[in-house]
Image (cartoon, rainbow, N blue to C red; front, side, top):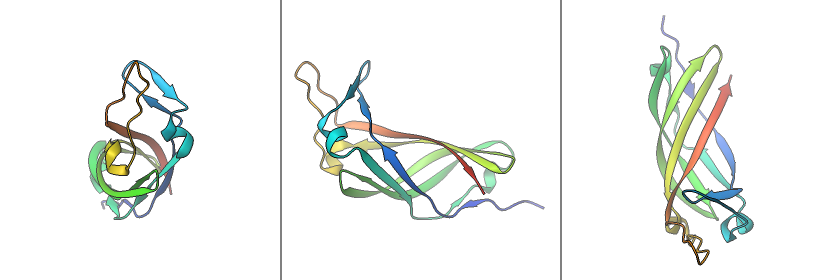
Length: 125
């Protein structure tokens, strides 16, 4: 009998400690100082049954909030079941201006308006 696996709810608090700009990390920017955290809240259950035999790609839909602005996002995540835990890894592409955030400009280098929120989670029942 095939087991049913679902992620029915999740709310993640994401710490923004620094912005990676290609070959350097920029900490203490306006974004990290004014909005040091963001959130991702799952808005639809995720069926992870395809993952039962190895690793599979599944879609997660949720609300991503950065600097007080919320947008619905769909993220493709790789999930793997190991015993009673599920390991989930994914990346949410973002455009800073979509969240009302101006990309940092350090004079000698300007960070692009696009980036990603990356996650690696280990979930258990």
